[in-house]
Image (tube, rainbow, N blue to C red; front, side, top):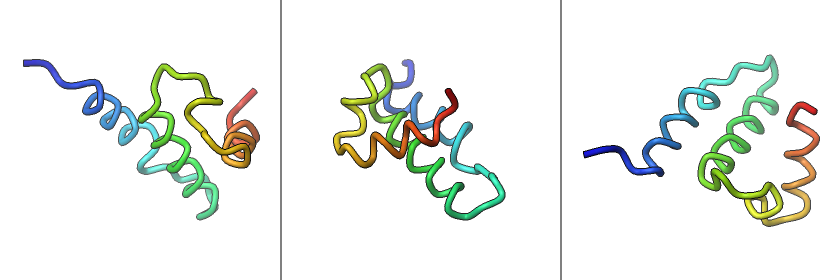
Length: 65
């Protein structure tokens, strides 16, 4: 039996974000939060994943262009 999408995305999040070390505690926390939200809303538009304007703005500011 295969893994559920939720389990797969949880592993993806752990591998890519859970141990982020960006040299600043606040950046580490933000990367972790953004990664977790993205993994929960995988495949959806950012506007749907980040349901508050401020959270969406912060994600856009953080993510590479």
